[in-house]
Each structure stands twice: as C-alpha cells, then as structure tokens.
Length: 336
Ligand code: UT7
Image 1 (cartoon, rainbow, N blue to C red):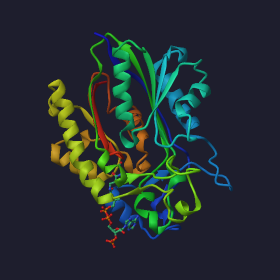
Image 2 (cartoon, rainbow, N blue to C red):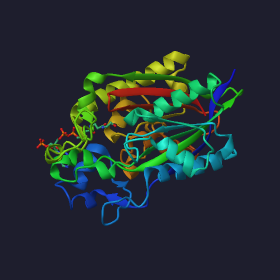
Image 3 (cartoon, rainbow, N blue to C red):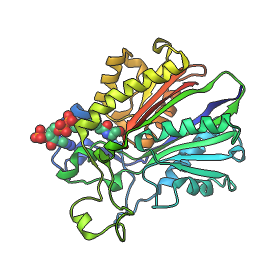
Image 4 (spheres, protein in one colour):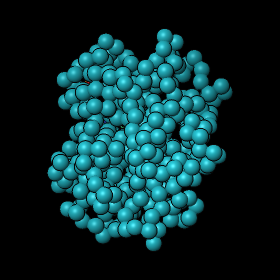
C-alpha cells in the first residue's frame, strides 16, 4: 500500500527578536502578564523599512524553509510535483503564496494550492497531501506553513490581547509516496462557522466597494479581533477531542504515542490538554516561549525543531493537533 511519508523538514524565522519588554513601548502590558497568561517570552517579527514595507516577503520566508526541507530530504527539487501552502497572510490578496514559491524555487510549473485554514492550516494541508498521494495525483509534495502576522497587529492597548500572542515564521516538509509502513496514518478535520466572527480578520472584505474605507479603518476593523477566553475554552476542548478521535480512527493508544505537537496557541492550552489527556510534559512539544503563535507555521516549525533535537526519530508515532479561526480544528496521526 502506498503511504505518504514526511522525509524532510525545514524552518525559517526572521532574525528580529521582539521581547515582551519591547512590547511595553507601544501598549500597556508587561512581561509578567504575557508570561503568566500565555507562556510567551519573545517572538520573531520581520524587519520593516521606514515606510513599513517588510524587508522580505512571506513567500521568501516560505522558500527558505522549503529549501531546508528539500535539502534534508535528499530529493531533487524537480521531483516535487505539487505545492500545498497553508497561510492566512498571503503576500497579496490574490494569488496565493504557493505560486510565489513555485517561482522562487524554480519548480517548473508544478501545481500550487493555498490552504486557508488559519491555525489549523497545516493539519488540513497534511491531510490533503496524504489524500493526493494515496489517490496517485502526486508523488512528492512540498507542504509549507508560513505567516507574517506582525504587519496586521494593532500595537495599541485596544489590540494588546492579540498583539502579544502572534509571531512571524515559516516551516516546510517534503511528503513523498512510499511503500514503507510509515507516513500519515489518519487525519480528522472539523469546522464550525457559527463562531467565525469570534476570531477573524474582517477587512479588506469583498462585500463592500473598494474592500476597505476610512470608516472601517477608523473603527479598527482592519485589525484581527478575538474573543480570547471563548477561543481558549473551545480550543482546549477541541484539542482533546481531536487527539482522541484521530487515535480511535486507527486503533492506536495514546500511551504508544512518542510525541504530541500541538499548535502553539498558548502554553496554558498545551498544559491543560496535557493534563486532561494524561500526556506527560516531555511528550507535549512546546516552543511557544521563543516564537509565540505563528499560526499555520507553528506545527512545521515544531516538527523541524523536534527532529533537530532528537525528539522525533524514524519510526516514532506523532500526533499533530490544532484549533483556530473558523472555528476549525483537527489532528494528524503520523508514523515518522
Ligand atoms: O490559535 C488560536 C488563536 N488564539 C488562541 O488560542 C488564544 C486563546 N485565548 C488566550 O490565549 C487568552 O484568552 C488570552 C491570552 C488572549 C487572554 O488571557 P485571559 O486569561 O483569557 O485574559 P482575559 O482576556 O480574560 O483578560 C484579563 C485581563 C483584562 O483586563 P480586565 O478586564 O480584567 O481589567 C484584559 O483587558 O487582562 C487584560 N489584558 C491584558 N493585560 C496586559 C488583555 N491583554 C492584555 C495584555 N497585557 N496584553
């Protein structure tokens, strides 16, 4: 039977470190509040020039992560026959970022598809990669998760609940068809649109002329907003349900799972899920203190770091799980 195995990982984060202390110059917050409520100590934000233009594009960040994953996998880049690109922050309104890295990497017209599922984007992208490979549509898929969040944040007291949480970054994996008994075993995907407005970026929007106007900007409606405590509550519950569901689907016991990589939303969510599910701390991966929440990029960045740290080895059982805007949530079970 053909399986879809992850054979290379890579990640890239901008070099600019923004500490909790740095944030206090723009908003009424403190290192103590951010650390206690989220576990975040610092994040990476892409440098901007004096006009506010980022020194690199999201596509360029994704391409850097992708080059690392391609190199680690040992494939020839021309083996790639599909790009799946998860982001909620494409460089322009359209097209999506997948086509930009097709060009940056010189991938010679391969298919490129963006996946718009916010914090759950990489889970959906891996599920899609698995499906494309098992259906025979593609054999070697580059899967990228990348975000530039920093240019969208409201750096005033009005936006402080979100501004302190989010960071920029990119992660990538190469997924390839194999006859070996490894790879993506199963995935579960969910959404609940009635909560779409509890965590969303409203403008620019296609339902009004010109998509943005002075009134919307005056009302801060071009900034993302979130009902934090409500998202927290739903996230904790859905993380647990998804882990259970993806394991049950394949008849695997949680005790046999070597590592859980949860979407890095909040250390308190990770801790609550670990405690509720009985997963010890050393089997719940966390790097949120360094990078904050990089949305679709958290899981591939964590995969690359876990592998580099020797916490993810060939043959290990891995569960990835995420929850985010939509609401959307889901999980993948993977034999590394
Ligand atoms: O990937 C999915 C995306 N998002 C998430 O998963 C986020 C889920 N939610 C959370 O992580 C938490 O709800 C937050 C970290 C956003 C907030 O923590 P909380 O414990 O739920 O705090 P809260 O929203 O209930 O706010 C408590 C207080 C409020 O002040 P009052 O009304 O008690 O006077 C806030 O105004 O903390 C205030 N506050 C802040 N204070 C200092 C909110 N943001 C900040 C801040 N610095 N950055």
